[in-house]
Length: 355
Image 1 (cartoon, rainbow, N blue to C red):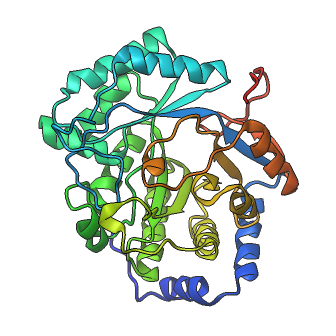
Image 2 (cartoon, helix red, strand yellow):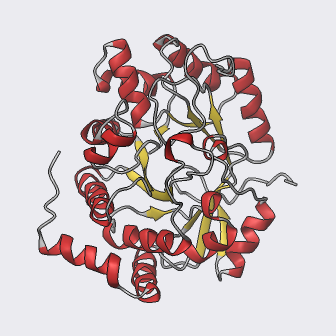
């Protein structure tokens, strides 16, 4: 991977903009970029379900309250039938996708993942957005397979796209401190590039507030932009702050405020001008801030997220209904539209009632 030159004029200018620009001025710059990419007055969202197939994990990330060590009596692996039932519940309310992610569980054989993909496609067909780059690197190391083979076999078994989970901050100095057992920067980006090479689309994320500097956050955005310039495989960027409340390893950290979120989101829209979509993270920030984010560069309201466990385990999450989400979008001056994972809009499918 290429290195980021923090001494370049462009890098310094963006860092100054992030740190010094008045908030509303920064928002206006991001909104201008949003309208360049999406001139229509539409904000999209998706109905999906986050299915965590296992919570057993040996990565020991300092910021995670969800994972359980092997032999913990609260650890689990969902059966195919349990996963299928969750998919059916999602589809019953208009869901068009599942987000399938789990811990780094050393006791699950690789064939289990392949059989799961085949089972879902045969019995509960739906778009599978699954296995973060960190999981793919874990599979590669655990089963002694090149990353390209892992991606290929998952894709051939039924995986449709890869989520950008585990992005955190794409600076090794930070990753080594908070998640040293998990994929480091070049490994994480390498999975993304390999998926793009094989024709798959992926999303990309940033979780900030891990003790990184502002320059570290800008470097993360530069790395995203650089890979997108070469592959064009990213569909969307999503960022949110660390949720330290309930996370023993990060309990001394202070959760960043809404202004920091809006500034970071705006910088993502300005710098990553080649990533087509920017999500508002109302799940971590709440509907009100999520609504304001639509004026700070975001063109997508994320997911109804029928089920969410990882952020919830840290003690901070927000719930909503389709009606509330659509009301928030309309109150911000936009027309809400449901979408698929590739951001194509849904116009011909009935929407089941959701309480």
